Length: 224
Image 1 (cartoon, helix red, strand yellow):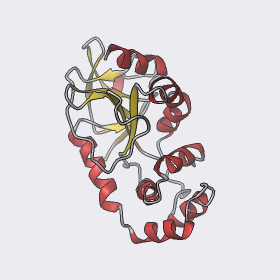
Image 2 (cartoon, rainbow, N blue to C red):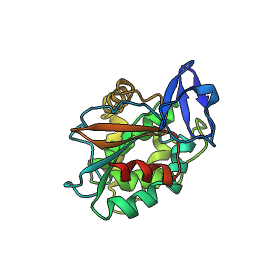
Image 3 (cartoon, helix red, strand yellow):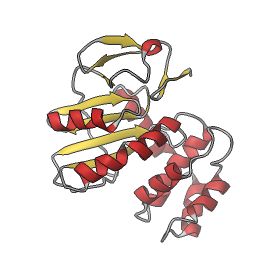
């Protein structure tokens, strides 16, 4: 596996191409932080697994789906800089719902963190876990998210039964789920993190690659 580190995100593979909002095609090696969001020209249709929880109203017409890795610093940037404005202006107002889905590909710690999210979900704490991990992210693949360390970290999540969480994490109960969601992303063109899809099941989703600024996300949501 080859991982390209770009100004806006991590991408897999040798040479990848995406189409921008204007339909122009470019390669991975030419993508940089100053360019607009890179997206495929054709909307992509896929089903969100029923077990993935959402933030926001179930009746919202627009879905915003992020495929992310808990170790990815660009995902952390998206969480800190873009997601709060999405939640404030679209999710909390009932216009859209937000999903976070696993694309855990950066190493062993990523797999552990992904499984931890679903163990937290057993207690209804999926997004509390998501928010806490991105607010306390360590250095990539430096052992900051071993099972024992994740157990210690999550003891700070209010209302989480740490004994139940620890037993779940030790069991590797959700290893296959993390892999399943990562494969779902790959099957729909995800090649790195973060990748965000915006749309609905009927018309499909517009993909946006990288930790793009809120203005880019807003442009796509408003167009729908």
